[in-house]
Every structure is written in structure tokens, then in C-alpha cells.
Image (cartoon, rainbow, N blue to C red):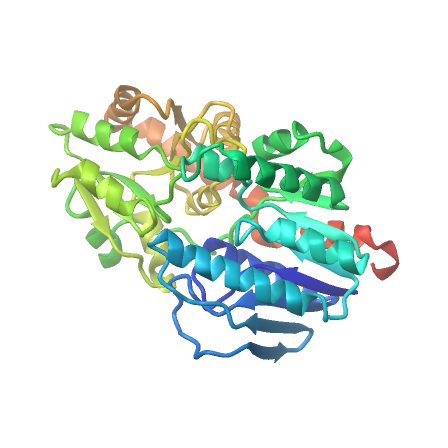
Length: 400
């Protein structure tokens, strides 16, 4: 089967969807011919590309084509929009000329699903929609846009996209339920999680990198990953200040669109620290540095975003502080497995009290760590990718 995958970000972009797109493309390319249609690297890339209209890389069954989209820094909205619009315009034009049997689209940029559905309709091909973040719900819930007329048009077009898709792949139970409420038949919606690699060995925080991450605090609450609009950051910072006298440090490793706002909330408070991303080879030691890891989703965004960082925390055998709505996918996994605690994302006092109790009960914390490690294999990335390939093959059975 010839598969065309549309996603703006692809390595050397460092966006989470770039990494997922790469894994999906490689898994499909083991049995099929795959073309990825991406943009010029623009998401904190580890390498920059010169200007071009089209760049092509061939790697066996995998072909990566990059259209010459703009690569402005993402911190200003008009720069980000330029990157989005230039990618979509060039990618749709190019996609219409590529011979393929199936269109597979992810959600970078936010209108990518609508663009992929358009290409599939014009070429009369089946369309598979892999939703990483649910738009425009994400933009509305994160207060990036207001529910004005053009956003209502966006929602209408997105529902048409969902209706057209032969298959909709979502990341969790809450996202599944939210898509179903839009009128999509349950049999066309499948849950496949992004998952993570399971390490061969576990690590303690005796390693120099782990010690550096801990910043000398006796108890560390760690958030490692993107600081996006979806997190309950005010609640976390409020909880940190309530624990001022109790030796608890809150460490944020990473960057993101909400970082400057979080720093403003902290306003120099010494028990909250911000550290940069570490190289990939040091990530196991970053994960090992925490007494407990934060996974957070702001109320109202359950089913809109499903934080994949949860699976890396489980694989590292660390407990989870889930500052999320009780009906979110993260809350369900943590509650079912006993690998952590679920706390109201609107209540700093509840978060502080949960942490305070765990500081006093190291035995309970260790039990949570053991439960995390025990369930991690359920979210092994290889299992998830194999299932992804299988469900895509079912769209055109003769190619299986």
C-alpha cells in the first residue's frame, strides 16, 4: 500500500508530534510504501534547513518530502500562523500530485485534518485521521481563541472531517468519548495510545544528572516536558507556595508556550526551579530524579489533550501526581492501577495536602512506584505501533 502521511513537524523538529510521526512512519514503512509530507524544520529543530520549495529524502520504503514553509520562531502568534499557512498551502498542492492509496493525517498544524480530508476527497481516496490534540476544542479550552463566528466555522469543517474519515485514531478513553459526542459512529473510532519504550534497567537518583535535577531538595515534585497551555499551572504554583516550610521542591524541566506565564506566577519563589531540556541520553536520569512526577491537564481539556508523558513516567517506575479532572484518561489509569494520586486541578490546597501526605508516607510512595512499573508494559510503544499498522491496513483490506 502507498500511504501519504501529512504532519508539519518531523525530525529534526523536536515537537512531540514530530517524534510520533517518525515512529508511525517507520512502523508503516516496514510493510508499505510511505511518503511523509512535512514542512521545513521550525519547532526547536536540532538542525536548520536552507530555503527551498521542495526537499526530498529517501530512506528505503520511507520517503520524506519537505515543502518550503516559513520557519519563524513560534513565540509570536503571527509567526506561528505564517508557518502554518505556508505549510498547508504548499502541502495540499504537493499532496494532490503524489500517487497514493490512502491519506493519513495528524493534527499539526491545527487545520491539518481538514486539509487532509480535502486532499482525500479530491483524489477519492480513504482518509485516516490520527488526532493528537482535538481542535478547535483545544484552542477554545486553552483560551487561545474565543467562540466567534470563524471558530464555529472551524468546528463545522472539523465535524465534516470526522464524518469523512474511514477511521479516527484517538489517544485515550476521554478523547474517544468526546469524539463520539460529535456524532461519529463508535465503530469508526479506535483508541491507540502513543506509548513509550520500556527501559532494560531502572535508575535511582544517585546519578550526577539526577542530583543536579533535584537541586538539593529533600523531596522533589518534577514536571519534565512541554509547558503548554493545557496545564493547571496556577494550581501547582499555588501548592508549591503552601508547602514553603516543608522542604518540597518543584522542578520544571523543559520549555513551552506557557513558560513565561508560569515564571511570572513564581515571581522568584525559591522552591520552584526551571531547568532546560536535557539530551536524550540523559532522560532516564531526569525521570529517576523525581520523588513524584506531575502529569497535569486543566479542567475542561479532558479528552482534548492526552499527555503521553504519563507512559514515560510509568516506564521509569515513578509515582504519578495527576493534577487532572477526575474523568480524564490520566485519572482513570492512575485510579485503576494505584500508581499515584489524582488531585483536583482547581485546588492548590488539595495538591499541597496530597504531597504533604506522601512526604510523610514513603511506604505508600514506594507501593505506587511498584504499581507504575507493573503496568508500564501495557503501554509499550512497539505494541501500540503494531496495532496502529493493523487498523490502518483494515481500511484497505486487500493490501494487508
